[in-house]
Image (tube, rainbow, N blue to C red):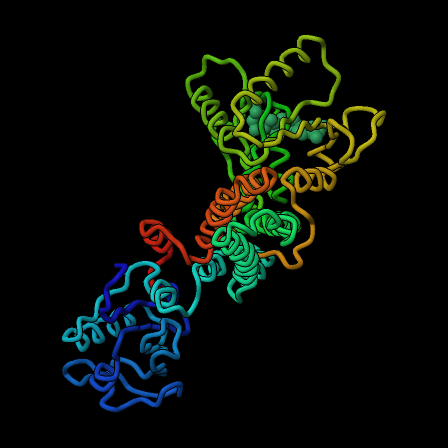
Length: 460
Ligand SMILES: Nc1nc2c(ncn2[C@@H]2O[C@H](COP(=O)(O)OP(=O)(O)OP(=O)(O)O)[C@@H](O)[C@H]2O)c(=O)[nH]1
Ligand SMILES: [Mg+2]
């Protein structure tokens, strides 16, 4: 897939019935194919109203064809877009006819992400922008759309490139000093190398923060509701979802399986998972459900540990404490647990509700405290609240930013040593730069490229 130059074709719109369906073809030279399809040469970038016929001359569809001549196209190759009527069978026929007529030139069905891959390989977009296209299409909230659009327009890439440029300047300084060892003595002071390095690290931190927000927007938060049976986990899910998704009864052990529902809090996608109440039981079905509860906790971004607010005896407190310890033991690293007391309506209002009060008191029944709970969840995951300027980012980007930061920290240490470690200082700068380059694809291990693009859908 990585190197093939054959023309490719795919349905660019979603499969199914619609007003329009768009078939897209990209290749090094499509003029002959358009000639064969429509018996004429198309004017580039014009909407051409044309009729497509099958091999016997029978009418298939009247469509709008737009021809983009290389390199002024999405992929950088010749591109032909056929805007047809959006019937699945009709589009099959259109594709079939194109494949027939393009056979001699080797026209094949595109692999997932292949159009975008070609755009990337032909330097139309960088890797972060290519990923932003997929993120824009998959965006689950308005904020995620805006964030992906910002990345696609190059906001993320230009921040990365600026950092790379700053590091390059530092490297040029160090390396020219290495070539003239007699000047080395004064280098670190004269060039204000340490200050400049600190400034780069600060900018990297800011970008990391923004990218972290962006990842939350892109992937959302896995929020797991866990606790003993009957504390009101399913009721809370229903309250947050605004509808009766899970069964609620006064019987302990009602929920046997995970129940998932996705909502959006302040534009942040939240995937809520209600779980079977955790307790010792001999019921085989319930045991299986409880195993799944633990699995959910193991892969959570945030766990709400729900308890019954009604006063209980000491044994109840001890059981809760034990359960909390067990949960803390299996949590993924850095996953926060929010302790929440439910059924506040059953307790006299002797406590105050507020995100700063722990544990938080809520009532899934009346809705009391739910807004504070939402705020507390967003705080816990580090959601800054402002979607202004957020760029959508991926785990891969965060990892690169983290590794770049590590290398800059190391170079900072070597800078402390003064001139004895100048070469190591320069080497760490180079490594940091490599990591940043991986984000935009300037420096990318080959296998990674394939991995990134095969996650796209066909037609992108
Ligand atoms: N008064 C009051 N009752 C509640 C509240 N939340 C839940 N309940 C009741 O508590 C009982 C158990 O609620 P569920 O939501 O099924 O509890 P659960 O934690 O999902 O229970 P399991 O699925 O068995 O683990 C039901 O009778 C609910 O109506 C609340 O805030 N106030
Ligand atoms: Mg339940």
